Amino acid sequence: MGQRVTLEDIARESHVSLATVSLVLRDKPGINAETRRRVRDVARVLGYRIRAQGDGLSTQKLQQVGVLIKARAGDAPHTNAFYAHVIAGIEATCRRYQINLLFATVPVDEDNHPQDLPRMLLEDNLDGLLLVGAFVDSTITRLLERSSKSTVLVDAYAVGNGYDSVVSDNIRGAYMAVSYLIERGHRHIGLVGSLPNAYPSIADRCSGYIQALHDHGITRQYSADSHIATNEAAETVADLLRQYPQVTALFCCNDMMATAAMQAAQALGRRLPDDLSIIGFDNIDLAEHVTPALTTMHVDKVSMGRLAVQLLINRADFPAASRVTTMLRPTLVERQSVCSIRLA
Image 1 (tube, rainbow, N blue to C red):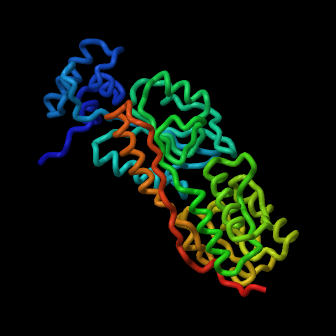
Image 2: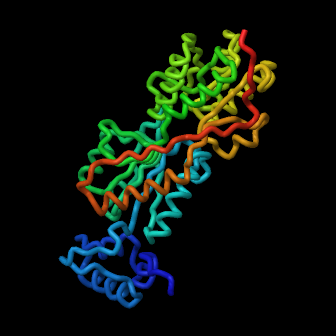
Image 3: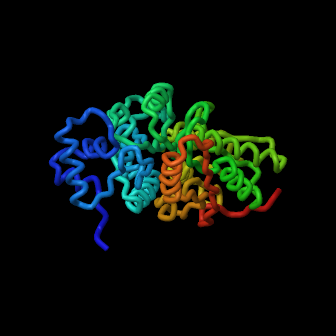
């Protein structure tokens, strides 16, 4: 069986842009008759099945999908320790369904609020959107409502929860992590990497920390509040350990915070894990390569990307269906950064 014809093949043979091919095959306005005829003729010659107008049938409602990924200054999404795996899952699933992908970044501030809008949101050459890792603010919401594009949030959040989404069960994961520390005898447990107005996933991890302490009868909380930035986290952890030397364990809201906490603790002469146990969240690749290797909560990031595409396909096929939130349950990965202590 020959390889399936893609929109790139048609664009190349027609000598037009990928966006033009997408518009023609979706019967969108704005393309002159000669170009429209040429593109459709090339598509037929190449063996691409074109939907007959008015027949109500479609072999592929999602032909071109945009992926908008959060990016801070100097951040490259394909090398991001978390989102690189999410993107891999998205790409693999789109390849399976012969869906073309366009990528753009959304500049965000330290709290993941969009600072600018990519041109992709302003153009009408997409069948669907995957928004990865950022707040969907009011401006983006208005644009999406106006364009009626199928949209799925991936580790992203919007006020009102009006979109399909794929997220991690952050409350449960944090609860499991802190309970694991408590089961090993720790009673003075610090929280690293949360602020009162933190990104929802981080705020949920904070809630899981608080709930685990409460359910185990522990009233004392210790917080090294910071944005998700390693330099800031290292400073706040150092301050916390100097002020509260009785702290024997830290729950960190992600693995980057955990590695910063390790460095700060070791700089103060704390031995890991003998003097201080540390547990992270996400299980990025770095986690198993630090010393000691980091115990953490694993998030199936590749599946997050795969499921997002599946939800997008479902939304395109059934636009009136109820909104769906798919929640992935984190699992504990035990390594060497946590030890048991005897209760006093």
